[in-house]
Length: 512
Image (cartoon, rainbow, N blue to C red; front, side, top):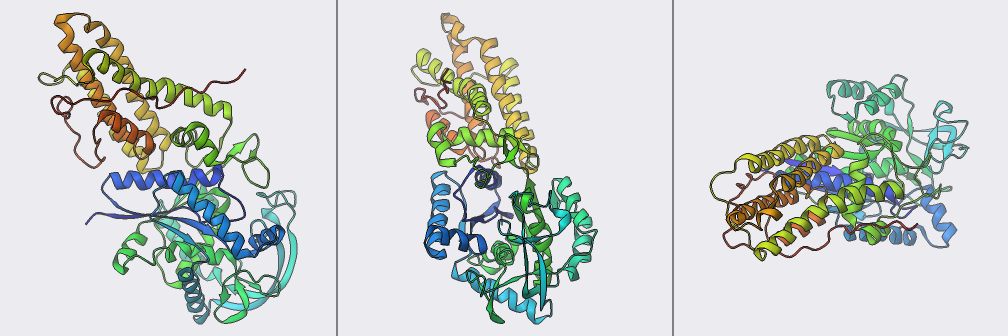
């Protein structure tokens, strides 16, 4: 049986339509899902939308519709956006789905009956944007660090989760499992949070103030706090999977999030799991912010990049390439149109796109598109090019396994650059002019055809549309990363023809 592995994005809050932040996390999850499928693993990939809470009720009221009607519309936009972008998720969950609501109520009842939920009164500074209370030490100049607004003071009776009961157990788990939170800087951040005693977590809102939520099973005058509700999606989203398979996926669950939601995922979530008697997830992988200028990209600050707009203007894989190449996972990065265009033109238009066009053009000009046989074993420059791709594959796999997408792409592009060097050194365009050297020119173009096939194989997890287009032009299936590498010079059948070149990445001209 193939090894099972489970990837999740956060479920995206429906107060905003999909933007760059959502797209990056989703592209990362999609890349990992595709990579591990190509490596022969059984992958389950979950994404979806988070639809309850103060913000949604408030936004729906401002737009003059009921919360469910508003959530239906925005959730539909997320779903259709990911479908249009070719995201390969296995399930799309909504927190308004009946099976999720039933699961949340079941967990609440279980934790309540064992005494880890109690009724009390609390007052604190509350950020509606984050839907949580803040301690003074967490604020920046008295404001929420993410929304740059002053929290409001709220004091009311509510139900509380005894989160502190599980603090020591969580600490032990983090110390005993170094890969539980990555990169390590975020693990240290969480350990810093756990140096102080954990306050109990308020897990309800009175219906007199907020009715848009899941009713508590033990008190129908309260609804569940949105984070307690939303975090349980990672388990409820596996509800449609058979029991033994579900458990196997969960043992290898990897959550992908941005750094603004580390505390709920690294503190709230594992303590909820421990209280409810579930095993902890395998790993929490935390990435940085995409910035526009000095500010985090967000709807509230008005600096938003839309995935479908980028797809329409430049093609989705050009966008994916920039996101994966320009952000080192875990660090912040900046998005500017100038940087995007420079990367697109240099690496994609002048790099990969030009190589594909050049090779196929020579194949058609010199041999009417028919690949010529390679006599004997690869030697000299031919073998060096083969070795460049073997090295790129080994290193790219190592980097993808640890979410170093930018390094994986560097290795692949190093092999692509080796193709350009090979063309210059072997000069098939000169050999074709010499009758006695034409067979050698045909061998060189066959080797370059192999190089393009391997390029498609390597980039499929990262740039799936481009991998398909290259494969179609070559008329071949590049194969999975788990399969043995086809032998260079022997993988194309005698008489195999390739298509005429088609532009993969037309150069973006900058208006002066």
